[in-house]
Length: 333
Ligand code: ADP
Ligand code: MG
Image 1 (cartoon, rainbow, N blue to C red):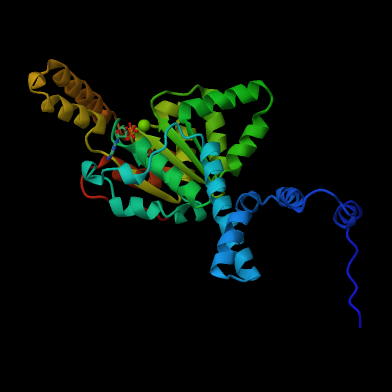
Image 2 (cartoon, rainbow, N blue to C red):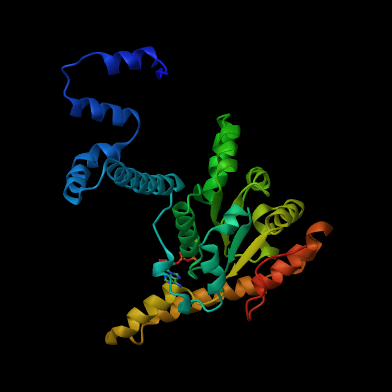
């Protein structure tokens, strides 16, 4: 029995079967480009030369090219995800000094860097005063997520509220909400420095509740949970938000000293003429005052959150506010 070949679609069959004076290398490059195999185009001659030297057969030659294409494709995809995430800087755990932040649960952070929490649609909330490495850790977790193949969006809370309000005014809110709901990991940095208007708070609440159990959210904040009402302006909204956010959550406590302050103090000390520097003393007093103002702010509001959320808030608050050894990272119901 003779084998019959399926006819090719007309335009392609014409291209393949028509005798042509175009050199095969040019045709091959065209086909490989159409098939989106740029590494094949770039490498096939070099790999053919190497394969000939090694006396590799055709399947081995093709295998080498396929492997190169896949490695390169993965690298391009990671780079694309990093660009799409809009990180303000690239930071990783390679440059993070865990010894400088003893309140942080290093084992938990390294576990989070493996990215399974994103598959499980859990959240992470990093809490602590300014300069303790919250943004650095968030960026490093975001980068690790990009490398593991997850889509990420990084934005400060204030910028996101601004974007949401602008999108609402320009009647493209749905589109932005859809994009924010679709990323696997949304990183919301610096929640707490700027209070929101009532509309701004509601728009942010909507984004976060649309992501509940559908995607992971990482939030960094200088405020303990019981002060989040001062940012959102409404106890009801804050309670409902905390209830959703802390249902499946890992809390990162970063209550140590400001890394910036410690570094500049060290730099000053290294310079003999500055040992008595009054600027450093002023800085330390100012940062110390800001920290103790936050620590002594009233905490009773937490307990007046809606009943369903009071337990989560209480337990989360204890983790975020209470100094001492790290408590269990996950909240369970
Ligand atoms: P936060 O977000 O808590 O205010 P940042 O993450 O912005 O603090 O940290 C301030 C600066 O100090 C950044 O340049 C960051 O890379 C650096 N930094 C903070 N903590 C550490 C750390 N433990 N190891 C290395 N660098 C750190
Ligand atoms: Mg920060």
